[in-house]
Length: 141
Image (cartoon, rainbow, N blue to C red; front, top):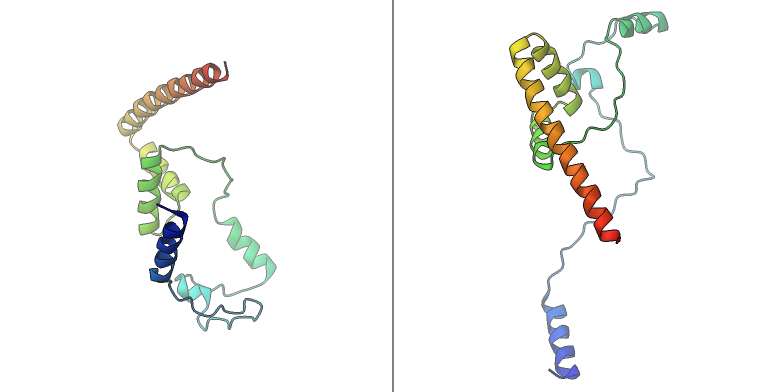
């Protein structure tokens, strides 16, 4: 194909393609109006009767203390499925893990089955890491 013919083909393709129209951009610097419903009613929380610092501290002390944990490494498929499951049920992966631990801690036989599966997965991941390291060393040579 000559240069002139290829230019014509490209020009025809450019002319044919349809571009989606984009709505006008909203000005993000203009403050948006506050929603009329409060967060308490949206989340079905009971409003706090006494908004004093002492009352709020006392209420907060009644909840279990939480700790941030390091990132969790999961198989891609499990991560995708678990994340979707949690989104569908409006919970976080961390809350699912907490609940699963609490329930499995009550069932020693089930906890033992989980432990066997976890050890198998650990050995598999350890072998995968060794294989990756060996592959990297061989590729550097």
